[in-house]
Length: 169
Length: 169
DNA sequence: CATTAACCCATGCGATCCCATGTCCACCCA
DNA sequence: TGGGTGGACATGGGATCGCATGGGTTAATG
Image (cartoon, rainbow over all chains, first blue to last red; front, side, top):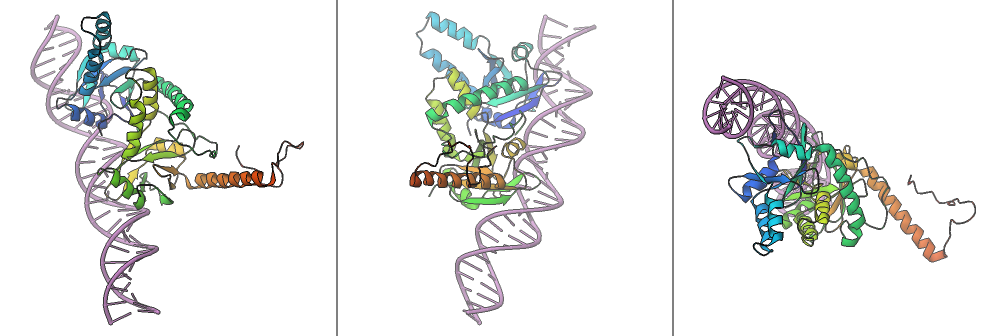
């Protein structure tokens, strides 16, 4: 599939290296032979946004909508491209997260990769857990509006089961 | 007949593997040659929602309506893509259910596949039985209300009467 | 010369593949 | 009609491969 799906938690070693989940790597490689990752601090969350070629293209597309040499375009360019780092994937499928990136996301010994379709995010596991809770709650609220989950009107057993911890699938 | 229908109960082995019912497999294969299952914890039931390519397309469609880089989109993405796991079907028609998925649905030694048309669900047999029992009862109750005229429990004792009470905690 | 980044190798665990067994059902043939 | 036979499917176990991870060695950098 050409989308980033699912979440994976990997270990960040003493050198600042972390393995990119193999399924994500596969997606990246399909986008471009020289698989590398465009990575930048998320604008409004303690996390990192990341993606491959297609993400860069999307950003280009956003900017293309604005007139050349406009203030908006300049600002947006800086906001989107200014902090981007191009991370190279080594022979073992790992990347090095720079100090500044680690700081923004508050990464310690473990990092969680979260698939978001066209891009993915990198979180500290604890922080992501909170984020996930909020996101799920929001979906429960909006679900009726968009009509996914077509839950029968007959309520289930009522128990929602134990909420899973952030870990590898 | 590209629909998931009927229910099947199969065994979950020590490795976390379970055979996908052959009829379901057939539907999946018709949707995409590389038959794999998109699976995620149901939002309000101790069960797993699952489907094939067409389910993924549905998700894409939902997100396509939202602008790039909007908060709504990010939130939905997390809940929809982040929780989804892509299960590969092996040569023998089996999938591996990860620990987190098993936990959410409370799966032990057996799992029940429940066809729901476009998608299907995976339940622990006892829990599904319970859900089905409640469903039947609700229907019966509704019939009574319609047929006899409301036999309300708003009466003084607050007791539900001779009928066995729904075991919903 | 010290420090950091890129490369290579080793290892253990889990996932994936492959084969073997058992069971049920449809079909065939005497 | 009844016994035999083959196929589809579920299931169990062993073998193998890939992936994540840790450590060490060499090449760039200031």
